Length: 111
Image (cartoon, rainbow, N blue to C red; front, side, top):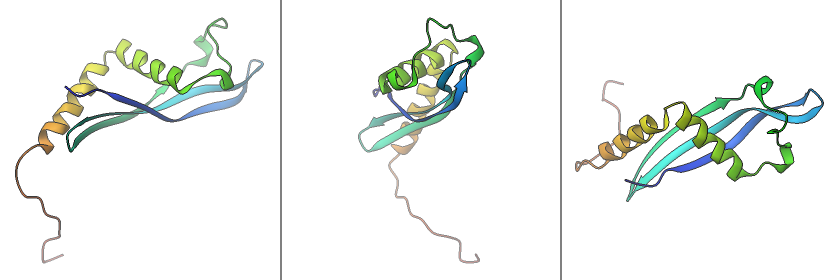
């Protein structure tokens, strides 16, 4: 099975919350897997309940790395029991692309 690639193209944040600046409220993620010429993907977002974030665990916005965001994404999807289903779905996308037939594009003549 192919490696899962995690991307975090952007986050949503609020400017100020309880004396802190730029508090992340939403992580937008993309997962993908590639096997040869075929690719499977999934995307979504993770809402963060900022009222539940422990003050000791809070990280300043400018101290957060892309690796932190990727790790939080994997952790959240895994804890929610979604990671396995997402991987299975991406593998199915790859498998369906790996069918040997000619593909063409076009519209029916009456359109």
